[in-house]
Length: 187
Image (tube, rainbow, N blue to C red; front, side):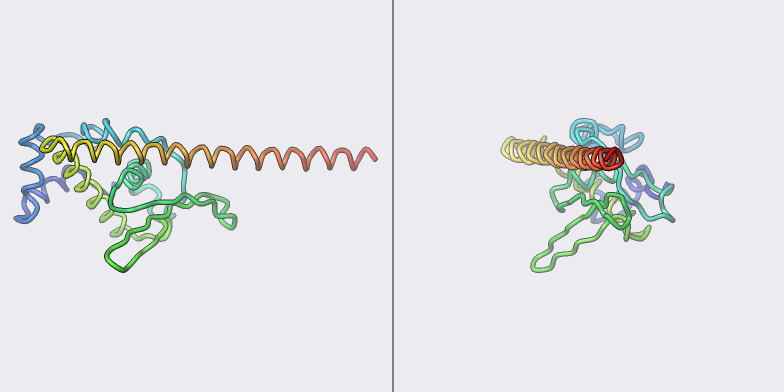
């Protein structure tokens, strides 16, 4: 796999400017062990997002866990996302939008390179660790984070509902076209 969670945690421990993230987290909770899916912050929040298939770079399709990446993207407070159906590719694309000051960058997962996907994992895991620790330190922050998480979960449910309606509509249209075709043959 492209992203090795434990190797990333060790890398954070070794960096002078980043080691406080791990130290703070472990002081508030416990030693970080296992995989990303084993972490409380993942189970508590990110598992709330059901999975939807989307295009990934062909050369990287077996190199990273697309489900974890999708959950990290959708659950992030630092970026936005959109799922669009690409008629040409006949598949969904997961768009990520990041805004920094006056610049905005929008990319699809399918156009990213391995080092960019790896960097996304690092950014999003670090963000989730910081938010989880912040929840334990300050009641006001906890309430704000919980409220933002709830809004993101509800938004994802609305996205899924929209996609479901679009797919049902496509199937109904196709069924209607088939029935009309049958009627034409009967005439």
